Length: 96
Image (spheres, rainbow, N blue to C red):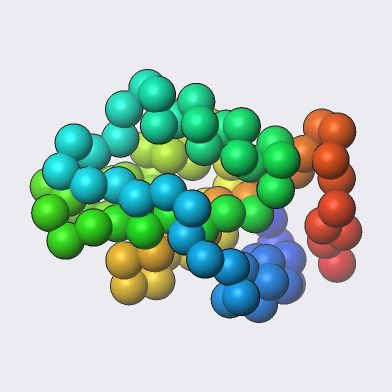
């Protein structure tokens, strides 16, 4: 579980990131979850965009993604979700 200080640190880092996944009309599926897990292993911190045509609530999408990938839900702001998961092999982010 992340502390408030760690979340602030990760939010600041995520500010410069561009979203690499989009959740659209189909919502979250198994294939997307697998790709997000791989991206988290490679990058640790990723942004996911929720498109206008997504039928699910952004909070439920964020919870579902964090649960299925085992990642920490750092932030949901607007239509963006920020996820963090410590990498096994490519550890770059040192949390305060």
